[in-house]
Length: 153
Image (cartoon, rainbow, N blue to C red; front, side, top):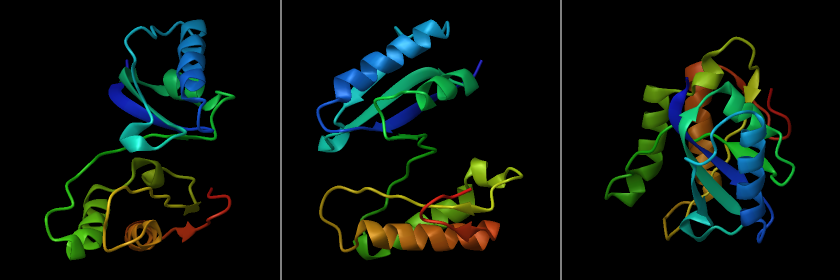
């Protein structure tokens, strides 16, 4: 039995329903109860995105999700945190959180490189690239791994 979790899918705008249906079908074929899924299409107004909350997130669920033909990427959010009221300190908060909490997949033997991809909404004094740069630097400091924007391994 796995832990409760979420998966974030990217797809072409307008295919959000197809992603949800395909995931449900794949899970059913794998013998996993898909009736308990909570699906949010276009979260935070992002077309081409689907978030699925699952009562159990285990290897079989992740495997089924990664086999979907209607998606570009499957992201497993690790945790969330408040950036606080001081927007000029938000990037430092992100770096501090990543340094403190880490990324379990980077702690395993095997990874030699990684990539940070961010997406934000709203008005902020920083860009997505600023987030990626600050988060990447924190992870390089913690794990000593290289950054590969094309094919992280």
